[in-house]
Image 1 (tube, rainbow, N blue to C red):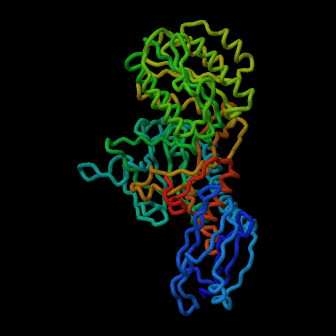
Image 2: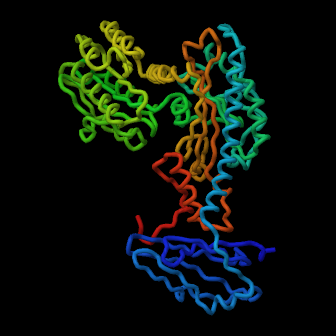
Length: 564
């Protein structure tokens, strides 16, 4: 019965900033929303539709121009023509509704829904840790798995290629009409990772038990979308299984370890100073590798992290002078800005590490003392082709004996003359030393610092569940319409529980699941509130989660005419 439904129009109470009135008995399909957009303090714009003529419900046409809107800084009143109210008076009743109660009920529904997603992720983490506990590493293991890029691929003789095989896929409306297999997960391996490496094979074999948990989770909660396990070795197990499409060059650049959900779950927030040597000895391929290393480090940072980039020769140069002496949030805009500036670096002069190292320690120490930055991990990333100075006095002054700042060193190029000095810096400051001689070495070597920063969490078994900010995923979807789906991800780290390695703090990977924000929107009582009210509720949820940004789909935005 359409007349048994209720509809809530967001009409502000006289003399207040807002209020709600419930019109019972009005069929929502016959109502056009009245949207009110306050452009600024003295400018209020009203958008009203018209009620279509409906003799059966007693409606005649309603001219929106007859609606009186009076503003004095705030919206004081909205009046419906008294004659029109009189016409429908026998079938409607105006009831005031407490907006706080609506928000409370909506938030409770969201909490229950998101709580269900967290339980699913916890089950995945427990299963992965238990499987690892009873698995013995086998260096000669031979194991065929379904590689998502090779499935259903045949060679010239009509035989399935290695790691391919027949993998049944069906279009599924719940997964944006992508061909998927809800019976099994499969594996994606980046092009720069050898897909038959013993470490990869053992880890994939070890996580086969997740298939049953994936399916069980989906049966318990059919609103679940993608579930996955990102391994610290580089492979990505995804459910439901899909056919992964490489780029135009046949390359699979996706690395789960670079994704925000992996980084946030694997490490705590961090302050990072990147120091890059731009002396004359860094010319040519060395500088190309150094720039790629910086970009890769930047890709491992998220909105909870803070960063700055310093280039040095015989003097200290901030790549962005506006960020001199401070840390900036490592959001997407700042990361991309740094990348552009790094590409403009040119080599010259002689390298003097000591002054740049002092400047880096000063920035981090001031941030810690003043309560700025992440207030958590702090690290310096030194990218150089060699360290010749005596800089022990710098560490004695700024970092010893507490060693609050870790120093990670990246030796660039094939020359190993100064490797010992570079290694000494890292080992004496709770960091990690790596040697990068080619561009292909960059990704794996940069990832090592994440393992080091995760050790305290692993040793303490801090299974913190994280939620990412809202984002649009363009990786799994082939069309623009599919990729413009706002979502958030919930993730949880997976640790090794073996007694013999417990003190080493070994991170096995991260499990997670994606939640489209549309699933949250579905919980809103839309027949009682307008779209703008739903957006307000979501905004409150984002604020409670500590996010400083609100991203809304175009259809949820009510823009004043002429707005940019």
